[in-house]
Length: 379
Ligand SMILES: Cc1cc2nc3c(=O)[nH]c(=O)nc-3n(C[C@H](O)[C@H](O)[C@H](O)COP(=O)(O)OP(=O)(O)OC[C@H]3O[C@@H](n4cnc5c(N)ncnc54)[C@H](O)[C@@H]3O)c2cc1C
Image (cartoon, rainbow, N blue to C red; front, side, top):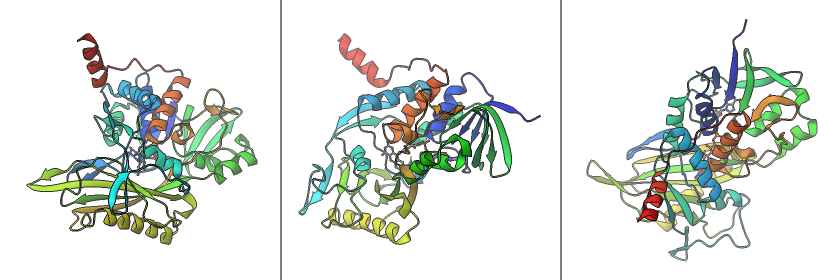
């Protein structure tokens, strides 16, 4: 007889791993199913000449919900994640100099909301990086990790999912299924009866964004500014502005180096259009050269990558328990289902899923910031 897992989690990015780590506190009978060779999803480590770094730009705007999401992560990791809250206005390059970025005025790019997240003046400074979070969460996972396993179909028996097909041929059975991949894929993965044709159409048709990213390692300190840069150029063409940030310069074997990471967005349908992708990447470089004419000379490293389906909400109605209405044991933990975006949405969606599954994650250890606040209050 086939083994039946208590939980099958599909997707081992930050969302899936947070859930996997939380559930691992109570059971080991969990399958963590991942299409890629390794876990970690978008938040995996890349090696720069300056040391390990995030796979692209990472920025967390400060908000009550952002802090809440990071408290949940701190609880899981048993470590503080929030180092500080900083205020630093985003800047832009205009008429030969840097100025505070005040917004896009009457011509916002179509992916305005994605950029707006990055242009908050108040940010959370992190004491560990997202690529380290996913590694720590993976270490806490106690079940079976299944890499190179692409879930290609959910199968329904009555009002429950009975099993999934992996790589088109293998089957895996579980009592409960948690989907932490991309919501758009549900249109293909769910059984015929689970969603109406209209709901499927809505899921497929929604606007989704692909991130186009360039990471540089410069052979000098380009700037001491750690502010978010929003570079918009002079012409309003179809490819919109880009955002990026420099990390503080470091010395490697006596040589000054500095990393900067940049991104812009194109609509998901354009992801395979090499002309659009090429133009957008060229434009990022042009913008940087305009603002810092020597920044791209003698680069130590340049990484160009495309991250499809980074954002965009599928219009999918869930039950109050976060399951598909007619499938009571399929929890939808996709980060983009959350009203909050990005890392914050990912962690909040994971926290809500863990709670809907009936799990309680113990109170967070106090973070460094709480300790400081307590100390200040007692002085
Ligand atoms: C370049 C880049 C820059 C970003 N910058 C920021 C930022 O500055 N601030 C911020 O807050 N957020 C940022 N984000 C967003 C943030 O990283 C994501 O919101 C978060 O990582 C989402 O995590 P996830 O686990 O939901 O998805 P992912 O990390 O994408 O993981 C999903 C995993 O599921 C697997 N999977 C999907 N479908 C299946 C299937 N059918 N079968 C098996 N496995 C499957 C995938 O292979 C993948 O490993 C950025 C993301 C990228 C890519």
